[in-house]
Length: 209
Image (cartoon, rainbow, N blue to C red):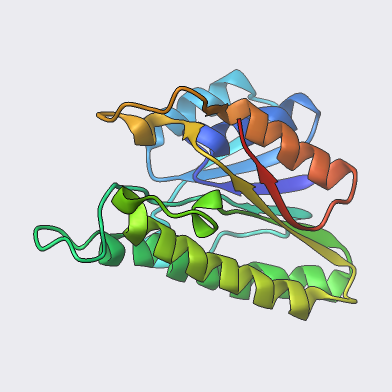
């Protein structure tokens, strides 16, 4: 199976790349950080191809792919009304528009072939928004709305669609902050992604520590 994973240099994306590579799948790992991608590819030279790209510039991700994991995202704490920093605007281009662009490029070939799987990494912040992350949650709610639209348009095409919505997950996004006492490991989310693909799970699936 040919797998595309965005935001693959760290956190959930990296854990997904490792999980699928270990299972014998060919992975195209996309991220902005060249050094981290090279390190990842060096661990799985037979399976992982590293592609350095800034998804906010709307690059062509190549293909075709059997599985698309839209994981790339931006998180920074902050409120919608913070006068010092517009975190919502910072997040919008990657969390929403980049994923919208990728879906428009990558999903039509899957529909034409009549099979494949779309995985979108969302967040439980769309259900229970903390005061310090209203800007982040707003973009993830927009992404959830996109997923619901993709899910409807993929219905009956043979292409499955799954939204994985993890709770707080220990990644480098927490650098400089104190994580909660109960927090997911990135590998926990990757295992759920793998199970969703291998077991054909669709719809929205949440996971919390």
